[in-house]
Amino acid sequence: MIVRWETDHDYVLIHIHQDMFGDWIFSRAWGQIGTQFGGLEHRLADSREQAQMWLDDEATIQRSRGFRKVLDVDDESPEGQQAMRQMSLLDAF
Image (cartoon, rainbow, N blue to C red; front, side, top):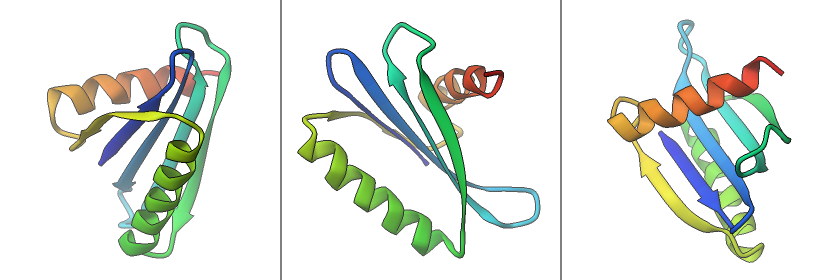
């Protein structure tokens, strides 16, 4: 699952997925649109339900900050693949 919020200048992207060991990973990338300023963090969730709870919390926070949801897709969709390429660019920093 990939969800992205944006303002005119900033973005937050969340990716929830299972790794090869079956653990649930909650990844959060954020930054300024069109720049390399931002960050990336990964958190290990106890379960998919916990990762979903973190996503729900993130949605509440981003709405309160004036962000709008611009993407809510499955990892395997073309849009999801594009979002993953964007996130992998941040891993290099």
